[in-house]
Length: 387
Image 1 (cartoon, rainbow, N blue to C red):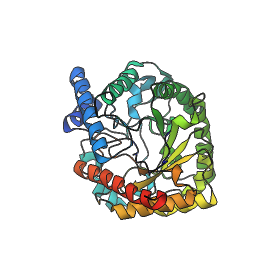
Image 2: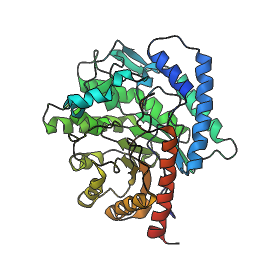
Image 3: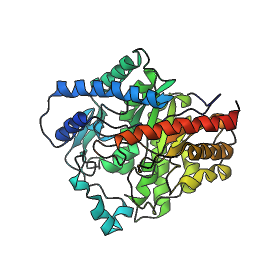
Image 4: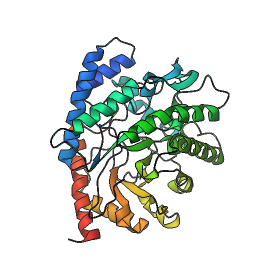
């Protein structure tokens, strides 16, 4: 995993805007409509090529395929794993439910999007059954990267944590949540290893390690949520066993939706537990109004020596384009808190379209934000490294 040796490197949290045609195909398929599989494959390849070029144009050093081949950041697993069927009833985030007028304002039902609140559930034994989509996704991304002028300093690819699947794709088969989580970890081991074996840094997306506090654990004691965090990290460690820590990074967030977020669990409550993951970097929110002060947590809970920090300097839930000077300030604060600028990488709070059709930021603004991140990282680099 690259470090910011001579300048602050830039990356993002994974998902990027899909084309209108690709969105239409995914939404229709999610609704049970029949679509042309060959057309979907062609659209995915074209969209992937486009998204790689747009990242490079914006100055991204550590980039990915924008999750273009997936309907969302985690529900795609039902196409690759056995055991899923039926329909979950996902509990809505408490900070949304608490404000009825805001819930009405969101009007999620009016959006053309893949439905995450009613994803398939576990109705049988979960196994990684069909590796062809995984192989195709990695091969397609590698083929695009091999084209002239299309390579990143380092490529990465995302995969979900067992915890987010277990909480959003509910359990109707296993005797306990723990058994379900560890079964998922064992199944995901296939995907985790394949990504790393293909030369990509693996990013595990684990919003469950923060967001579930105000979702499925909203009415339960904090200790029960922390126990869930510890259990899930143990499962992640089982899933990545045998992989070098420096080839894995863990993304944790409080939910990529614009809402009050006043019920978010403070970072200080979970940070010491996150350190037990056998990964080489943490990717954390730090740009939005609820969490931008939490860089201070690294003073009282120092980042382990082997870990890098990908700190959010771009809010993925607002169309404001952050000023490069502000981005530079955020990076310098993070570098001081970690006490080593070489261990800091500029990133986004979350993805820009984690679910097909659900993105708060207009596509043109996405690229402006990423360009601003590059400009801000350059300013910070001058201040931190000289030159």
